[in-house]
Every structure is written in C-alpha cells, then in structure tokens.
Image (cartoon, rainbow, N blue to C red):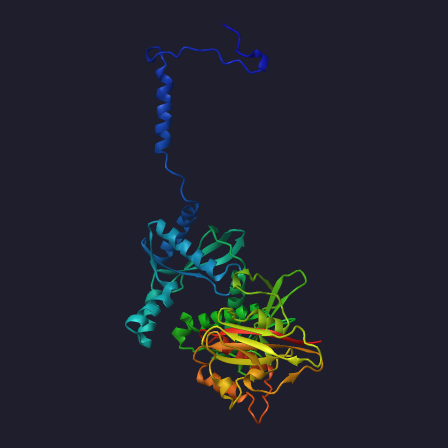
Amino acid sequence: MQDAPFPEAGLPSPPPLRRVPSPAEGGGRGAVLLLAALLLFLIVPARADPTTATLTPFLDAVAACAGRPDLTLAVVGVEPGQTALSREQAEEVRLAVESRLQATGRVRLAAAADVVRIKALAEGTTGLSGAEAEAQIRAAFAGDASVFLVEPRRAGETAALRLQAITRAAACKATSEPVILPIRVGAGVADVDAVMEGAVKALAQAAPNASAIEVCPFVAEGGHSTCAGALTDRLLIALDAEARSANRVLKGARLDVRRRPPGTSCTGAVTARGRFLVDRDRQAWMELEFGRDGAVLAPTGRRRIGVEGLGCDPTPRPFLDHVAATARTDGTRLAVAAAATPFAAGQRLEIRIESRARQSLYCWVVAPDETAFVALPVRGNDASLAPLKPGEARRYPRGYGLDEIVAGEPFENLFACFGVEGGLPPELAARWLAAAPAADAEARLLAPAEVLDLLERIRQVPGVTEAAARIAVR
C-alpha cells in the first residue's frame, strides 16, 4: 500500500479501502436493519403536548363532577384584580387555554368571557332590551362548569397558572396541575393596566354601592408631564370596564364616571386621585387612591411602572416648557417669533405673527405660575377679529392698532397662539372673548384651573394649530 499523500503537510492518512460485500454475502443485512429502524421511527407517535397531558386528569375530574363525558365549559379567565399579568396578557392566556381545551376533542366552549363583544354586536344591529341582555349574559355562562384561571405567576416570557372548574350548582370543583403558557412581554404599560384594574376591583369591594366616581387628573410631581394625562386615561378605561362588567349588568348597578377638568378639585361622593413621579434614577412611579367622606379607599401605594408603552414623555417640566413642548405646532400654517431674545429693559416689545393658511387667531400670554391673559382678539377691534389670510404677517401690538408695550422689570412669559380655520366652537369662543381685552377694559387674568381647562379643550378642536414664542426681559 502506498504512503499517504503529502506527508510533509502533517495530514492524516485516509482509511484503508474496504470492499463492500454483496447482498448474497450478507451485505444486505445492515440495509434491512436500517430500513426497519427507519420504519419504527416513522410509526412512533409524536410526543404529546405537555399541556394536553396536564389537562387530561383535570377534564376527567370535571366530567366526574358534571356526571357526563361530553363537557361544555365557560372559560371565564383570570381575576380582574390580579397584577401578575396585564389585561392583554390575561386575554392572551385565556385564549391559549381555550385552544388547548379544544385540542383535547372533549370540550365545547361557552362564550362566558365574550359577553361584552356579543352584546355590542347585537346592540349595533338589532338592539337589546334589558331583559334580552340579561338572558344573553346568562346563556353565555350556560355550561357544565365555569373555568377560572387561578394563581397566575409570571416568569420572563411564560406564565404558570391552574385551571379551576366549578359546576353550575357550585356543588363540585376540580383543579388542574400548573399549566405553563408562553406570553408576550410588553414595554411596561401592561403593569399600569394591572395596577389600575387591581385598584378598581379593591374599590368595588370597599364601596360596592358606589354609583358615581369623580376622577381628578393625575398630578406630576416636580412639574408637568404628559404621562400624568396618559395615566388618567388608563384609569378611565379601567373604570369604564368595571361600569360595563357583567356583574353590574346583572345587578342593574349603574356606575357613572366623570373626569374633572385639570387644576380643579374633586367634590363627588367617591373620588379618585393619582400622582406620577420620576426618581433620580429615571424610574417612573405612580400612586392612586380613592376617597369617600374623607376616608381613603383602595390605595395602591407607590408602585414602580414602565411608561414606554404609554406614548408619553415622563420628564417633568416647568409649565411654560410643558406648554411649548406639547403644542400642536405646524410651521407650514402658523409661525410666531419675538423681535428680540431677550428684550432689554426700556425696549419696545414686539411679536411677529405669520399665517400661511386662512384661520382665526386666538393668542394669550401665559405666565410660569399657570396664569394667563388673552391678548388677541380684542373686543371691538375688527382687525383682530378678522381671520388671517394665507401669507399674511402682522406685528403685535402695533399691527392691531394697540398701544406699544415697553419692557420694564425682568420676567419671562410665553406668547402663544391658536389658529383655527372657521374659528373656535361657539362655547369656547364665548369663554375666550369674555376674558379678552376691549378698548375700554383690560384683559381678565385667568386662574390656573381655567388656563389648564382652556388649553385642554382648545387642543381637542379638530385642525387646531399652535405656535409660541418666549418673551424674556433681562
């Protein structure tokens, strides 16, 4: 046998050549064994779903409770007050449990958790009377047993829980072994929803006869933050879900939820107050409590939350910075600029206003203490009441025939304008003009509560555009 090639390269020698025996010489035996092993592998059943294996003894126990092998189950889901899972995650887990129950081939599902969807669909098409709605809710829960998802625990991207079935007469129950399901982990808003739902559930237990709740907007500690408004919105969603819950529908227990304007105090029998804050490590926290007759109900305590999914800026800002940062600006429609930055004492103050679309103009001067006074329009001044035309530019105050303003003591304010095609709605326009200056009257100073309320309401007007400029005197 010849030497291995390229020995100087240190490469290993190839194995010696061997002759493969023919089938007659016994070479087919290995092929037959290989084929048999392959066939055995193909006919071995696939590994059973571990969840299905866990559910089998559970369904056997439920069938024994119900006294029948074919089961109709109403999967109610997790308790609303739990905080391990978000609302979205809880719904995802409920649907996953329903899918696995159906995969066993032993279960029919009742629409227990889908009452609100069915009711909304029916009301949107044919309409439902109170009796019909109640009958539909009862039918949705009609089954051999109701299945609750209890003891939810979250670990990373999985959730562990148990299924607990209770028969219609509540005479028998069955509980499964822990079931592990995958979940999607969101950006943190999930935890906010869970905290809100837990607080609302605690309120329902502490004040079951409450028929109305006044919600004070969340307050941001250390300034103003758009996250305070976002948290107020999430609380209103949780309260609305409680007001529409099947339990309240069946009992006929009405719950009216009212949102108070920003900067005002809550005066209802039951109130909700919340606080938002950001610590030195840029971690976000919230607190929420309900109150009745001076007593605190269902406080959440200080809870760390994620705000990434809320679509808000957690940074607390001084009032003027907050107004400017949250303005609905559109430089292609409206621009405002100060003639100098800053103005010197004794210098004439002047603001240039340029409109690039036809729109009515509403301007005010906002102070750091959240007060303001209306600058435009001026009652009785036709030039200030007329809409601006595209490409039209004016200088305030001289361009409106008003007296000049000379800078005096140091201060810093914000000259801010709203541009609205066709003008503000009548109610808002009347409020604005009532505080506006006139030829024989000064502008009325607007208190913080009224400033915040006007700011919120005007920004809700469709198509509104904002522009602002700092007026600083040094």
